[in-house]
Amino acid sequence: MSFTGSIVRRILVYAVVVAFLLAACESSQPDSEPAAGTPSETRGQDQAESPSTTATTLATTTSVPTTASVPTTTLVTTTNASATTTPVAAEATTSTTTTVTSTVAPSTTTTTVTTTVPPPREPEFLVSGPDGIFLADSTGAAELLIAGPGLFAIDDLDGGVLFTQTRTPGDSIVYRVRQGTDQAIETLVPAVDQGLSLRGIVRDGSTYVYYSRHEGSGPENTRVTLRRYNLETREVTELGTLAGWHCGTHLSISERLILFNTGCEGEGGYNFSDLVGNGVSVATNPGDWYEGCESCRLNGELSDDGTRLAYSTVVDGSTFAVILDVASSDEIRRIELAAGDEWRVQSFDLTDDVLLVNRWPLAAWVFDLSLANPAPVTLAVPGTAYVTQSAVDIRGVVAAP
Image 1 (cartoon, rainbow, N blue to C red):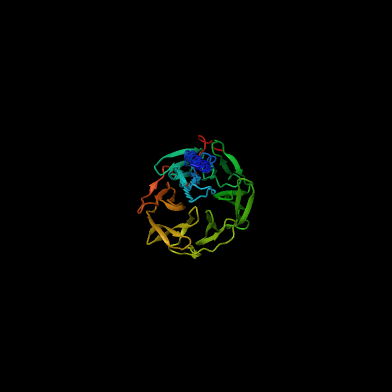
Image 2: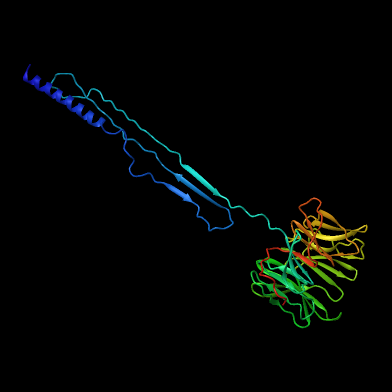
């Protein structure tokens, strides 16, 4: 063997060994490397509300991007079996690329926390009579709230009570007992020649007490006006004139309408206004002005939301309570009242579930309108009753003013 051939052979052996060692080193590396850093994690959660009766929903969303590109390893092996002195040239090149992709779908977890809504409040009634002002319910229970005679009482929409004791000019003060207290505070005080009558209450932005003021002592100078008093600002606004010496007006105050029941010596009828006294025409007016009718529609009363109207009428000697839809004038209910010589219908009060019939001089009746054929339930104490709009919460028995 020539010296040159020996040198070439050694070079080829060394090349093969080096190539083998390089391949062995690369194959010992891991298949993939950890992604640089930790995948970012996005979490969204609604801010928790302070404890209340409002249902709260909490939502948690987790999104994990986990797509990684695995580095590829390419091994190139070059061999040449020719024993010549020509430079080594690669005869073949093998290239292999492997990409591994791993994807995890984002997971979403939603947790709903629901607060149970308490059942509707059972109806309660403020009953004003000669023995005091009572809080009664339809089970026959009655609790004395305010001592001394009562003329008319309503709740103040905030746990307290507003009431009057007499119509006597100068003495017909409107009192208020605030929630959680046991003292009657003078709220509206008439002049010596004025008489005040409590009519109703509405929350219209602020809380307004509606009342009428009677002035004068004879046919020539008698004037009756409708007014409203803002419980927050103590402002009084006169809304208009009601009637004079020969007429009387029963008012029904709802959340959006006022109904005027006016009667003048055998004539009468209904009129409507908005909450500040502007006249309003409605689709139904069952009490258009009448004169000497046999089946007049009397004692009109609006529901609290102003969508329904109740009145009494006599047909063939029988007295009925009729409830109409104000918007359409459709009759919703007709209930026969066994009125006779012992009592007469004084007034109504109407809510979604209750028709209250004040019977003078007896205790009021309550009809449960959720029943198809409700029977009357008699309240425990006689007097003029009113369905409360909010839960009354005053302390102990309030002494007579």
